[in-house]
Length: 325
Image (cartoon, rainbow, N blue to C red):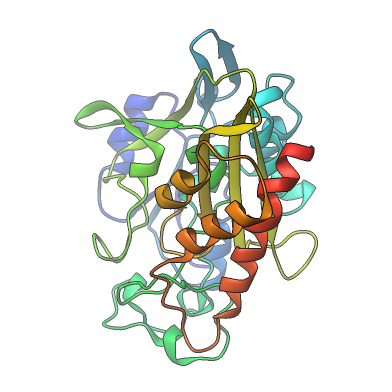
């Protein structure tokens, strides 16, 4: 690991000023970034810590919904008393993240802003599009479990966040501060693919900071759940994940949300699948139709077509399992 300058600002204004220049990177819990630096897959001259900004911590409940500070730890999310009823999906997703030690250190903002888990991106000696190279060597190798089944283009790394799919499912927004002032965007729009900027996974410009995630008030009867297929039962990233939720009204599903993770460069909300479920009674037949809609247009690589089967199984089982919970 090469020497770096560690800076600890005491205000958002200082963070913005210190992180606006070249060679700087924000650090919160550091569970992902420090791994990158040790592996040699990333190199920064200055690390600008936001860990001392207590205003970015905590979960606040109000009639308008939730405000979750970007520095809130995954553990705090997992055990929050506020995350019950329609918000329970967020605690479930937090519980699935890595190990207890990492959940204690990792933050909500860090989980949303983490870099890809592609082995080629993480290898210090491999050049790839994500690191400013000219092509993607991952598409030609047999180990493709953590690669996209919905194309790149050019780069097949996927978004590995466990919190992004359920937060998108509850219509979360992201609050950002930077040199140009403050802005709020839908969390679904926060993520970008390689067709926009190959070397980035989100819309944050130099000097910008993700400060909060907001969740609007949800119908009290709405329920959601997070499901995750992974190689190991604990401490692993999703090969395929699913955030699914709906309100059951007179035996039929309404306000349906279906978001897939681990299958594309960005979390994939599938409105066609939601439309297939909306207004229908939960059942195997309609779940199969939704799965077909969710996976339409998939273009798996040579060695990861099995992810289609995993995604289909998660969807078809979860539509019914959710109503039984």
